[in-house]
Image (cartoon, rainbow, N blue to C red; front, top):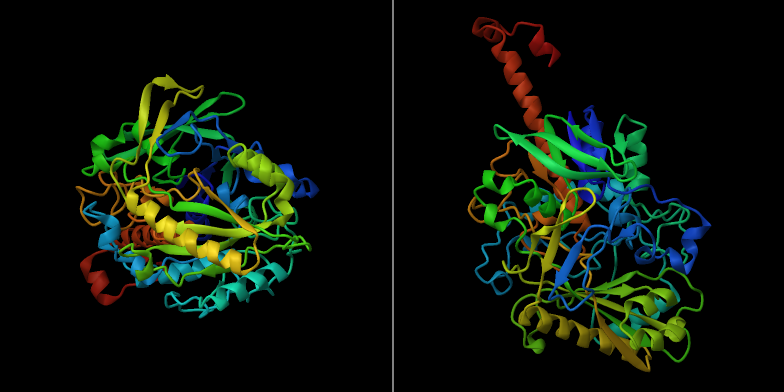
Length: 529
């Protein structure tokens, strides 16, 4: 009944709805399963150092100030297997874009927070999110409590919380998709696959249960083309990574959730822009939060217990800070777990990484998340001269942060530095994140068919049966992790499709009986439905 491409937040949640409704669903995933066990606890188990962080797709990066190539996670469950579990809703005002952010880009959400709220609640239930409502000063309204309460703060978290409060701030407990009953509170959570499956990633809490309920999963399936005829996707072509076997799959409905880079890559490679009145936006308006890591160097190890401590967030200046000199929204801070020495050495530029690695257990800090501007020049484009071994053309990513992005990041960094110094840090190391881990926006939804490729139900304009449900749909990035919003939007899109097909089926059945029978309330097809 449906093909779902990609098993991250968008694909897994769409499959969740469809399988539970009795649909026959084929899920195509480019990667494979991530094994769980003691090997996940070693330093080399951090995501970017594993084989699942794959650079086999030729993604060249220009202008980002980071690595010259971009890698992406290819595994069942997608990036959720290695994420830190933070599950924040967009704020209510995030669905009414700030003019200082969008600056005439035409970015517009086709719905408001209250329309997505029930699906946020459903996503939190599926993911088993733990949290403390009311502690975040920017918390949006909610119709139900978190499924779990928050765990106790680690000693290092209490230290940072105290320092922030001394500065007049209001730290809150980050909502986390972690099963508290199974969690060992180890230090290898953020960035690692969970060795005991206590982190509620999608492979654990969605895909495995769906397999027992009829989901068909094909791993190592690289989707290379979408075939179209008469306004519909008629075939999904894939190549097996190991055997090279090429297959064309067919279904009445297709959900594409390959990711903010891979989804426009596939759309452009398939030439689908010619069917869409908003074709010019496909691949454009790439956003990735202006993120920086600020690590305080402490004279004594701040986390000698080596326990999990990604627990705090600060949103006091989410909607602005007059003292910063930056007009409009800024963003927030999230506590960062102490990184493994190998990752510090590999990710920080020389000689900073080499200098910091021996001191890794003396480090702890914050991640800054500044909302970035949607700019048409930030985009992905095909490189027609380059073709990979699966037949896909190469992709180049062109991305620069604007002066406003950088100014917002600078304001947040100053706040993070002040907290670390108040907590007793000798010095603070600052590093800008150059990956596309929070990437959104390359096939955005909207209200105007000329400036958005998707309608308000995540349907690709011009093709009746193609839905996009990953981070690429977002017109703006807000300033929180995008995962829960991707999940909620996918649940909404899938449920609306189910409802629409059900209504259509009932309409056909009504039309199959005479008007006199309908008037008399005849039994049979109507009663059955």
